[in-house]
Image (cartoon, rainbow, N blue to C red; front, side, top):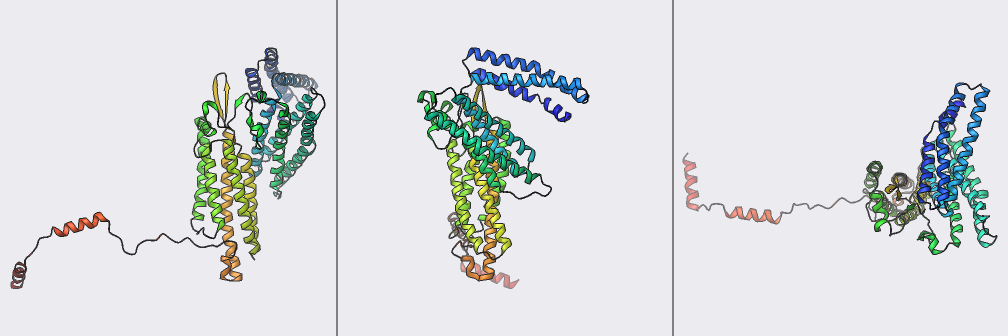
Length: 495
């Protein structure tokens, strides 16, 4: 216990994050008195931090000492008190709209991290990130309920409180239950199967719940107060705040698109994205090699695989600031198209599986189809890529690495699942053929025909320039008269 306490208090990066948040809040606020309180609270925390660490070190060295324990308790209480003071001071100079925007953004990022941790079997990251999501959601509920006390009871407050009640009493308990199930399954000595889609749905509902609260809060805002918050009128909401310039619309910084903003990422982040794209291209080459074998006429599985591959290439190009997709809304629409194609492929492949008499092949194919559904869902979540530009102290800071890499990883996983599905579909069709006859492989579901090789002429055609050259050379041969030829023949005969 003491070692864990020591490791926690030594993480001074938490203090750095507190400072950054406080400074950012002060830089965008015009509340002079509130800014003074924030800076004062931040200064007190700065001075208190080393004392808390020293108290923890003393307790770790003398864990049985009651004096050391009492000393630690005093500093612990002081630390918690000062953090509450700083939190309240920052809340006072931050509008509810900005708070909801930032919370929505962070929850979306945490949901992406949770899904990735779940797929990688990283229990610690999953537990820690899920805890962060629960904490953020609880804070949203607390802040909004307190804000509604400033309004007279009516239709507006009822709508907002209804949204917070749904999040607190229905969504969060379900999310906590799914997290517990996932952690238990992953922590077992022998990993236990569990429904990943249920976890992803529960995670997405948390994000949707916070978004719905924000929608309800913004209902009474005037157009001037919304400050070009055009995403309020749309079905898919991207996070927007006055502290940053979000890239959902075409009109951004100096008219730049989200794709252009992604191109301005720092070189280190570009290198990391390039590394992920390279891995994606390896999966793409596998898919290209697989679909190149087959004639796509009469085989919609191959057609859909090609379509999904093309769209995923466009999405990964977007993360590098290239390609036809310009804005977040374009990426979201692309993800929807992939999900639609995945649903159609699922329907076709399930029909193939239903006809397959081999239970092992059938189960393999159905398992790959579950992966496609899972990764399509994940890609839909990751498609809300945030290419964000913040102006801190006159310096433009471009961010978006986490969302970009999550998007590429989701596309790579989906690509791999499509490759396996194509292979399994063909294998299942061959099993059907062996049992029911040769006509089965050309069943009404799909037709598996090897792609014909490119046609090549049996006789090599001469190029026009070569033909002219040969004619010219032939015309340059010396003309030998019959008499001369006969004389040469006689000379050879005499020899």
